[in-house]
Amino acid sequence: MGARAAAVEVTRARVMEAAAALWTRRWYDEVTLQDIADEAGVSVQTIVNHFGGKEGLADAAAEVAAAQAELARQAPVGDVEAVVTVLFEEYERQGDATVLWTAQIDRVPAIARAAAHARRQHRDWLERVFADRLPGPGPAREHALHLHYAATDVYLWKLWRRDLGLPRDDAEHAMRDLLTSIDPRRGHDA
Image 1 (cartoon, helix red, strand yellow):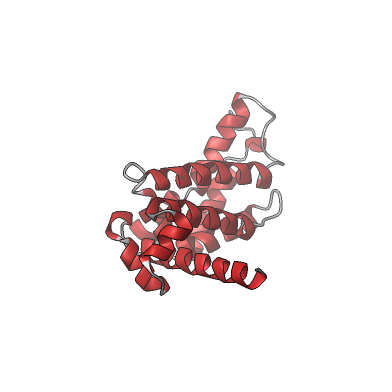
Image 2 (cartoon, one colour):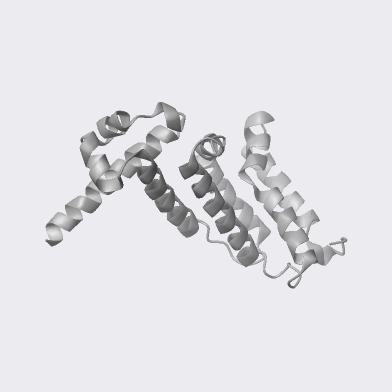
């Protein structure tokens, strides 16, 4: 029983990795279960048996990606440089795929669910890593969180790195400067 359970998990992981790899390069609607099966070296029926279909597979893959992102985002509280470094490591690795994925929110319910979870996860992370600088509960805290969220969003990374073509060092410097400038402890109106 243990060996069979391990084999099932290996198959599930291989299918999720194949789907994620395809979805980082192509639109969700353009990737068929057959494409995923071919990439994973399994049958379409295997995917259906494990995930119920494409949407169930998307939900499972998003859950795994969220857990991996949570593990990768380790930064000391209040260390702006470390926070920016952690974000850029993630964004350089999967920022383009994230932008492609989120561009489909309005068309694909599984993506909308994954994006909503990712937004909550990012906000929770911001509350942890900037706990030393955020005001107490209330409107000022919400305002500060919104500013920090905007300053660390993947779309700002995309603007700097892809649209404007900034070198990574320059983009990281810009994000550090932005985060430093919105520190509520500096006396700005909140």
